[in-house]
Length: 591
Image (cartoon, rainbow, N blue to C red; front, side, top):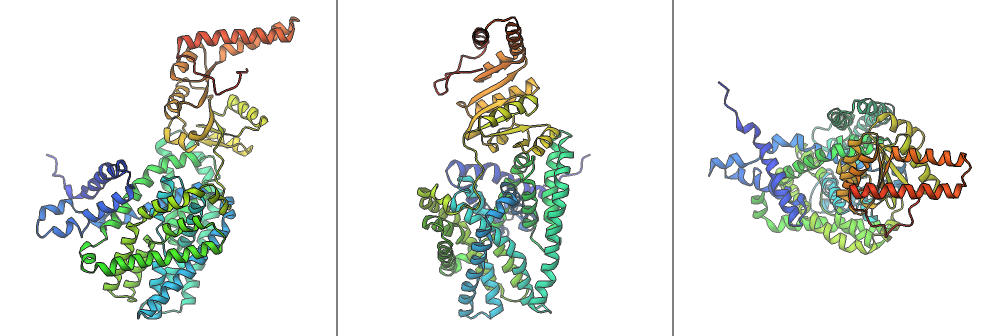
């Protein structure tokens, strides 16, 4: 007889999946950010929501989430987010944005912390406690702001880049600020200087080790895994790198998120970048959703209801003070007014690292429980306002979507306009790429053979490893703005899969595919290709051309007859396949 199943073990998992599968999509259909859905679900299902009714109605305990059971896993949401942000950059692009990261970011942390600490000191807190509270409230929410910028396609605007730069420096500052909190706490026996040296020295060495090891090992490691052509092994490798680098950074007194970000930066320069993005994206989305649920579960409505004026007033004051400071600093760094305003609205509310620092301050005896709960509640309320502030910021910044980019030129987005996508970079694909280069037409190539991509990358070609039959992968390659798609793989089934996916995602794009023979060409026309090029027919035509020229037939007559014959074949193939697609947007067809 089977042992009875303890359903309580699966309770948190089931409740989260209900939230991710029902509540978040419902908010999306209502044109409200799913982030707000996760936060409200956490609020309703947390210990201060249904969990507080346990004594009155014990059966409701089955619907309440145990925050402690999900906290450790939820923390990986921010880690996965920073990893994907690293994939969007590279060390070269990070170098270009150094003025924003180490200029504006540093200024925001220092100036905002001093202002907020001065206010806390004026309200009666001791200097160490005031400085700790100021540091905690200085942090903004990477986990909410970045996904919203990505969702609204504003990450590469001026405000998006400036926001990301500030958030990145805040993440760099977490480790020394936590060291400062520990030095100020009752348990700190050494001075602040020795605490900083004792912590930052191993942190710096750990960061250097991560970069050196990543440079040497990550590309060969993914090449080794990719050669297996197993999606499961590749997924395991991606998760291993994210968690492994995060834990290595944590062991070096750095944040796990920073370690994952460095790993992403290193992989951004490899041919595996886009396949890694597609592989890790579902995990990032689910883990971030779980993180938002845990944040919502930490909000105590009863505590807020008992002192609404204090909590909401503190949240509003925090967002206003930080926003005004950020606006002034952004203008000092010569960002346009609209860009500065949008960034200030996004980064004015508190952030998730503020919870960590407030908890550390309470554990160290720097603040009492009532103040800690008040601050956490105010920060959480301010974070709930981010979706609305983001929409307001987008309206303010949208008139300068292009001009805003000129305000922050450090990290220009990769060119995805009028680009050709070549799927399959064997001999045929490589020749097409060479011809596109000759005519100065930008392209990106994709191949599922790791050896091909490694060889092409060593020659400086923009070739990436991945499976182009996956819709999300094609979107990452810029299908929405591509000028044309050329499918040249050896496998007929793989060609048809890519053609079908491409035509479904973007019906109007020019789509040219390589065909094995006439029958395969007919099948491709039925799937909607603009042109199918059968290898057998083209080989016969080229042989005919060579024979006629060698026999002394004038070249002009030979070329004309070859074109006529090719058009006859094409009419026969399209008649047996799909109707011929209109060509009004293209010039005369040349072979």
